[in-house]
Image 1 (cartoon, rainbow, N blue to C red):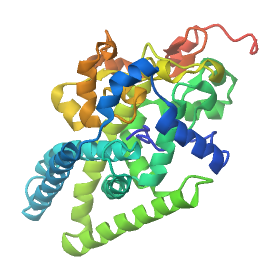
Image 2: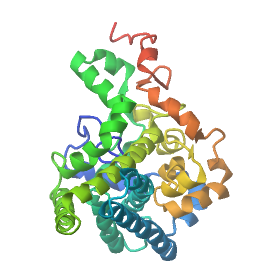
Image 3: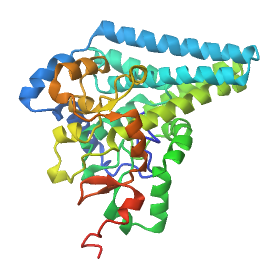
Image 4: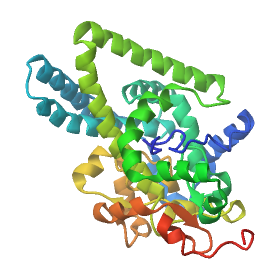
Length: 373
């Protein structure tokens, strides 16, 4: 979803963006994410053909994601109506949550103007999909584009990313802030409570200092969701709706939050200070190549090829695998696998001297910064 407690909106940390210093700054960051990020010109020429949207591929993806999602939800309604065992409803929530993640990826592509050639059609589709995945499209688009423009930059952290502190920052923090950080970085708490907090609380409220357009996005999305809940209440009943929607939101959120987490919290990775930051290393070294089994890659819309996505955000998800196969330089030698990614859960702090993530336990063995001694 593109932030652990938020697969993309604010990041899971309690702090809001340190970057939101006014509309002008936000617009510059969004434009940077949409246009200036990219590889050198010679590589850009090889990547450019894959940026071409395909109306037929996009339509097929909408059909093979939205229709099965709605069909699976309808089957869940039938399991409740005919009083089938509770586990049959939960079993159907698993594929439904997979389709929900896939719908989120389609919305994600619309934020990058990569899914369709028509910007207007993308905005309409993005807003509709945003309602279905409980995410305000325009508000999420803002934070996500800022994330792309700042990913891997220690001086511009805080919007649309996972709350990440350096070893020195953690040591200099108060006990209360350390506790908050430990709670946010705890993988069990993040996956157990993060999904419903994200979808039902965080995404329902506009960010501080949000523009009028972003506030409207949140309000209109909330009203559309309220309308769906009202219709469900008059048809299948609120209890049945909750028994269907909440498990799907939870399971989809667990998978989405984990995907977002390992996209930038892995080893070896890339985090530097602003003057050293460059978009190409940030993409190729600071965004993971998460090589998933075929079924999971399909449900997650190829987002595991995150290094390619960050290198060239205008490549639609349906062209990412083709791009990877066509350009050998993008086939990184040691991709992150499902089994190896589990070890990323222990990563907690960035060590600026070692240029590596460390665990809380490992950070205690690191020498203190001269400024802190």
